[in-house]
Length: 372
Ligand SMILES: [Zn+2]
Image (cartoon, rainbow, N blue to C red):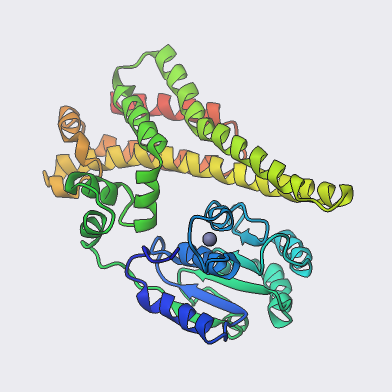
């Protein structure tokens, strides 16, 4: 079954399983609990069970599309930037009125439901109040406090448990078959978020990219102007590289959807809908790319600070780089603090639509200035 390998959320899954068995599925569920514990996976699992002829096998075309988030009847909504906007909810409203396209039942997964703007929330509430009979909602939130009470009261609540601190590396070894060293590194790099650790393990390019970024960080103090400018270009490339993969997937997704269109106006509608979705997806990937790269920069300076101040290697994030880190131990905490400030500032700047190349260039030059 598709959700059998979600770790530690047996009680949450059983609530859904019992409802399915007794044919008493609620029209809206609110999954709440810490990030990375499997809320989204379980939501997709529910969509699989509802749409798979074999009850959620995990391997048929329907289940695979749901897992890859390309199933036309499983809608995903998540914040654009910081908020879920009224435009997104209106789009959902329109989608909700349509019959399932190729599946049996539509499912709408709303990630970070606590980030609806007030305007969007009141429009969303209207859909929740009079939900179409063939649509099930799975709303996801880290905690209930941020979710409007009127939304909470219309959902069945399902609590997701935190994974005990210190347990994660153990879980990665026992349940996912990683070696203890790899499990430890994944735990560190993901900040203890299981979902992210698994994503890292399944995305070799993220690990490769980390290698490239760490190489750039380590080279800054000795780099000349030209090398710094080139490094900035490389950072931009590292953000854009995964977008190529995404584009291929998006083109295939659109093609598949077009093949199933009823007529030319439906095909045009699908093209528009997928076009908007794909644009949002690209922007999201880009934003995440910037953040991830700058997080790697920050983790390096933070690790150096730990080495300089405490010598406690257990606290390091980049535990596979201890020897390299030691070579840089001569830098003062004052300088490292300045470096962290520069990285942080760049992260803030890149949230706006600025020229990324220029922002990276400025950052690298400033970093060299404070570190040398
Ligand atoms: Zn299936």
